[in-house]
Amino acid sequence: LFAGVTTGLSDGAVNAMHGSLTPIGGMVPMFLIQLGEILPGGVGSGLYGILVMAIIAVFVAGLMVGRTPEYLGKKIEAKEVKMAVLAILILPTAILGFSAVASVLPTALAGLGNAGPHGLSEILYAYSSAAGNNGSAFGGLSANSPWWNTTLGLAMLLGRFAYIVPMMAIAGSLVGKTRLAASSGTFPTTGPLFVGLLAGLILILGGLQFFPALALGPLAEHVQMIGGKTF
Image (cartoon, rainbow, N blue to C red; front, side):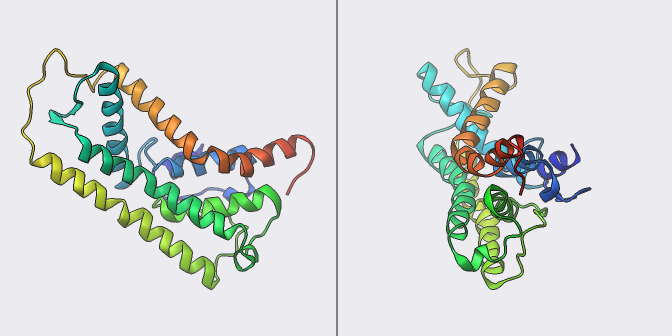
């Protein structure tokens, strides 16, 4: 519980080594970081992360009813949706891109403390934590090497600063638009319907982006642990 809450809040505090948790226990904080630390909400990054998802949610709602979406009285048009999609793609690009290279590069693999799916979990968690504005880690990874120091720094730059560019573009676009009065056709963004749509969108997008990698890492390790094999 402590690991899940603190990673979701983006403070990186730990009361146990995350690498020593059960496979599912380690996957939960990892997945919360990969979602953008929007559950329950990261310090600083949680707000703009959830705003991106809210823009996509009202866009999807607008598609279903055939109406131009609105959020907080401002029309959400093609530019805002494109920038929101670009922002959503930054974290998986940084995390999965670097993890894919590290999983086959001998220089990177030399730093792993464990083999098999737990080793992949160490790689995924390292880049997730760096790109996701966190501070926790799987302690089995020896990251003090030129490869890890360089690529984790690049992942940190992408996750923290590249994310800001499309968000600033969205802010600049919305601030210049006239605020519209709510009408009978306006999709409400304060009720349980919007909450359900937003939560479903977050889980679907997160699952599509990261489930394949998680299936090869902590989920595969969990299945093997049930069969009596540990790493």
